[in-house]
Image (cartoon, rainbow, N blue to C red; front, side, top):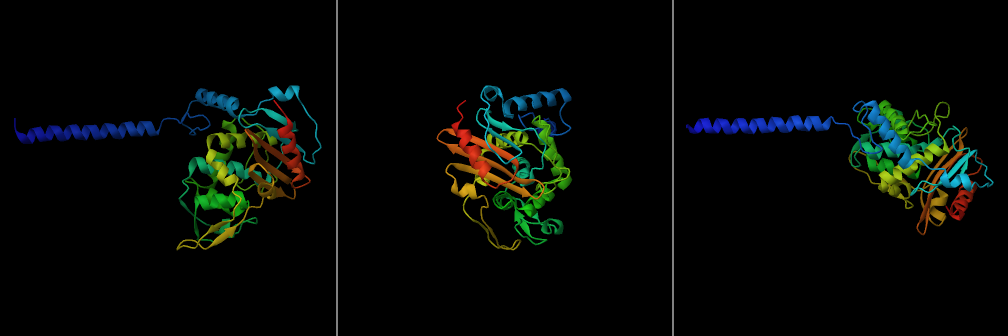
Length: 317
């Protein structure tokens, strides 16, 4: 048999093998991501989607079993609050936990979730004029600068930087509008019904709302699926971004007073607007026990937080 014929057969086999690999890869790429808590929009049947939502509700939403028999009353200025054990989901305290209220900057907990699930930490994001013009709190970046996603995350969490939130949303592969859509998709995937998000920063008080229950669920989901998030939620040391050929120097510090002073605080996210008043998410650990506190529409900045923390650790489910 001629050598050139054998060579041709071998080459055909190689070509066929390559084509098969490409086809299999394409099929795999288009399969729905059925991992708990994550759904690729438009790639899964309604029945499978509902199963994932049901599983998420069971796995991540706080549970009333213990609280129904052990309801407590404490003095708070907040309109709405909740304390949960993020490990087993037990509700330790609740007050109007499903009331829909403007979340202010604790909405950035969901922004962080979407970023960690969809964006690479070392990617560069270009600052638009729109983002640069965003009102404080802010990093104060100039239009045209390029910032790493991870640097923006630290600004997002530590100083509640609204410009960082906008840069991250605009840097999303399919743009800002898709980023907001992803935020609301995540809410639905978790089976939550008290929330509607319209921006990544929490600035909008008119059509954006959430509840203590929803924010506690989102926080629990984040801690359980992205445990590395605690380093962004809990950084106490000052943070510096050094100048490069694509960005200027930037510096900021942690604005949560309790995170730096209250024993056991692992993470925190503050929030405030004139309409929303004070909002807060805190993660605290003492010994083997960890709790998550959330409150909205509080008249004070920290007294409700300390009250909820002390009550949460006194409760013994």
